[in-house]
Amino acid sequence: TCFGRLVINTWRFPEAADAAWNALLDTNDAIDGLEAGCSYCEAAQCGLTVGFGGSPDESGETTLDSLIFYGKTMDAGAIGNLRRVKNAMSVARHVLEHTKHTLITGDQATAFALAMGFSEESLITDVSTDIWANWTRNNCQPNFWQNVEPDPTTSCGPYLPISRKNINYNNKDSGNIDVKINHDTIGMVVLDGEKNFAAGTSTNGLRYKIPGRVGDSPMPGAGAYADNAAGAACATGNGDIMMRFLPSFLAVEKMRDGASAAEAAKIAVARIVEFYPEFSGAVIAVSIDGEYGAACNGMAEFPFAVRNDDLDETVVLTTPCT
Ligand code: SD4
Image (cartoon, rainbow, N blue to C red; front, side, top):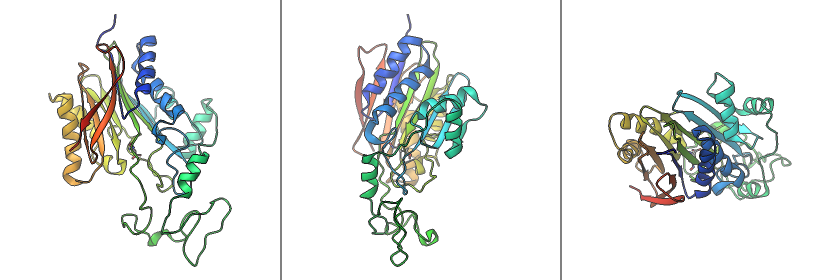
């Protein structure tokens, strides 16, 4: 019999925890659990922020970020800005298992995926096209970008603005102001019966991002981190802010120093809030004993799904935020 197994993931995605748990029961392998759980969400388009057909960038394209971090070997595989391939987490696993690299991005990540046998298909759907078409940039209503020339008199471009250098993307009155912090990236930690941690993420990132933008999710220490000797953590939220603080790494290091999982998550979030009080996001941490905790800021409460050997089924818990 196995004890101390655990699956925990961000947001109200209990089916992802179920999928991970079933894989864990099957193979008792944390990596298999993580891949099954996150792949479930990619196929189900969880929250429309995981997988294809969500979060179109400025050009209307959906791209994917994913990370898998294995605490037994301190090895990781990740892809950023993956284009036209749906299976982000599985491709990240191939980076982990078939290369010496950690992170592959963009069209070359696509080429890598195709070489590994994945298939190429558009990640754009009618839904993502609608989301994109309803977005106004510079008070311009974007047109269907493939077919329309930019209008130089208004600088309303269907695609990229003619002159990007005049745009201050921090200025609320211009640029991609409408970058909604659409939460729902799946971050997951799996602890198997051999006390091995796998932690990872899968997301289509933020809406209306500048093409090529990669978030925190595929960055080791930012989106997720795991060390069998210390614990594991994952994060969700405004990745452009979060990746400056490596919150998953920080939470794991705090547990290494003796903090509880809940304390560690709290410290990791508080470090960001000190500089960015408006920051919106959350961190989940798990100790080597399978004790877990979460902390969040910038929203009322943060839901997460948990399954472990002490529970008969997956539960969704919520933690109030600061
Ligand atoms: C990102 N961290 O790309 C992701 C977005 C996210 O829940 O977590 N949403 O910045």
